[in-house]
Image 1 (cartoon, rainbow, N blue to C red):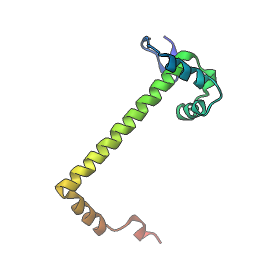
Image 2 (spheres, rainbow, N blue to C red; image 1 turned 180 degrees about the vertical axis):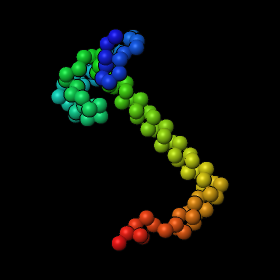
Image 3 (tube, rainbow, N blue to C red; image 1 turned 135 degrees about the vertical axis):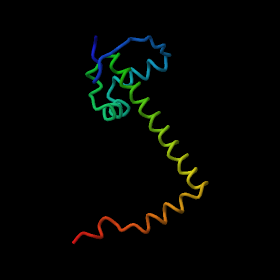
Image 4 (cartoon, rainbow, N blue to C red; image 1 turned 120 degrees about the vertical axis):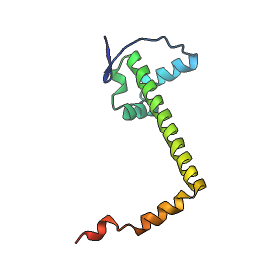
Length: 106
């Protein structure tokens, strides 16, 4: 079982790639801002990984971006629900009555 990044690989899947996808992968192999950005996001030097690992890095960072967007949407939806139900004003009133944590510091 091969290890990719931090976890063992459980399966290998085929991935259809277009000409543009192949060009993007080739660009990630060159010294470009995109490669630097991926290296920062993944925490690994991109030039030192195999093609399969590179594809995995791109996949993992894409999933992370999707999760962040879904979380952002969920927070916005929860905030809208609170505003619609009138609970936001009640929460603000309660927060104003609380003594701040720094008030007891000498």
